[in-house]
Image (cartoon, rainbow, N blue to C red; front, top):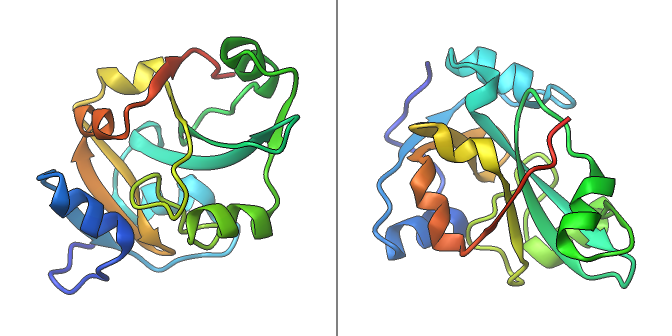
Length: 160
């Protein structure tokens, strides 16, 4: 497990500090298209504990974050039903960057440029510790799952 005292101070880290959320930084060698399987292996943790941050948009072009276990996928159809949208699809990388200020592969739900609603898969709450992007490619932070409450999220059941 790579743990380094010299880590980037991103908007996500500033958010965590401002809200008094303790975290442990983990840097690893980012691999393009490596996904959560690569980051979990690099950190020596279960992929189920690595939480991916996905930027989506509804039929009206409104953005949202969905937080999901690394080893699961999101049913956008079920997410649309549970959020009252007609249709939800992934945002383009350019749109995601515009809303969040983060590059795809380094997107964090913390410290986003635009306040987007956050939807959390219900089973994430059962985890003591999660590993989530710290706002830069190759940088995860370990936090208690309960720290996600600082985002005022809604809980959904959309994993497949």
